[in-house]
Image 1 (spheres, rainbow, N blue to C red):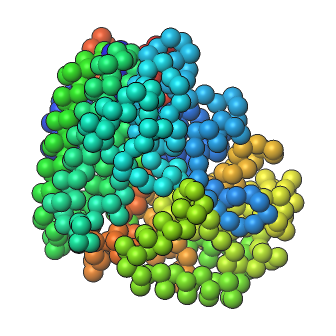
Image 2 (image 1 turned 135 degrees about the vertical axis):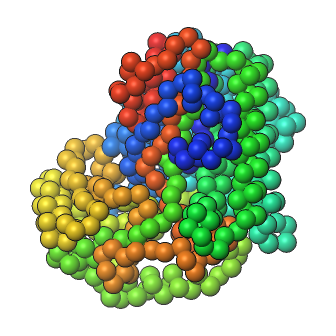
Image 3 (image 1 turned 45 degrees about the vertical axis):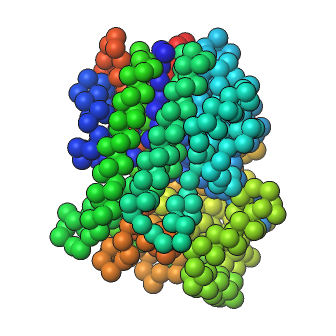
Length: 489
């Protein structure tokens, strides 16, 4: 094999500073370790695959429906992006067209197994209903489905599927399941790669490392700061990382790639601040709150919190099964749309502000005035409301009739650890992990105590040479896409 890319969903450099991943830590001494950036609005894996930021691909974690409403959706796929921007091409498509045999497994957003020069196995994410067992349609060529079946391949995991049979939460069982997921995925990828004699391999460990970091991060913080912590979570996570590192070491040894890329899409960090951007817009006179809509949404939210996790998931499955796919349509209209110039889709790690224009939302601002309006809002809020904080707003030029209409009109540049929400009494409020559930119970209780961070990790190792000369030119996952293509073209 000439080039192997191993994707580790949700890891950052600190993961490889704990002493739990000896193989990867040895590679760091021989290869080039590069710390990347990502705004956590653009999907990291889509940047790696398409070689474009979401402003050109539309590949955001969620987006407005742009149907003259304030509805949002998480539904996305590579096919959707290419349909809206035909100039885009997937990494493996480019390589296949140039005679390179490829093996692709578990890339988020790949919802059907297309014809390639080699093999491909679909992935979760992108609004797809999470499923554990793959089907025949999830692999090309379909004759290789028996390999997945024999290895008991697990397509995707979420917190729901990791509950014990009796509905309880057990750290040992939780991390043992994640370990088993990685083992089966590694075995399947190795067997398929050898069978098809591939030149380029792309294997992403979707969910397993991300779920691990979400659970582990709070306990490490509590331990380091002499707070009560769950030692069983830390020990179980340590075992998971040691075993996963062994799986990756074995895979690299057996496939023997000339060039190895280890990369992540983003990191995770503990929540430190809560931020209410809509409150900032209201204080600046750009948004008028609708008390009726706001009270209705708050009441719904309070009721949902009292519904047990397992029951919430069953209700969600019932709704999404009728739609055929897991599309989250969220009505954001908690403001008076006739008096609102801009709004933020709150509830998430990284968000942006949208101008309330007539074309996308049926709002009060002319579509052609978005650029000037966004620039004005960013300037006013930065100067009057956020000058003493660690937040700043960046105005972005919107290209009319372009896929970038799905991207926020104003980017919010916030330090890692901020979680955007609404209903706060202050624009920015400190958040403490004290008196919160442990890292494993929190997700099931609906507590967002760990958030995405915009610091993807990248390590590349070559048997032939170090890449130090062009290291400075690699700052994000779009650059990593170009670096991988340079291995072949």
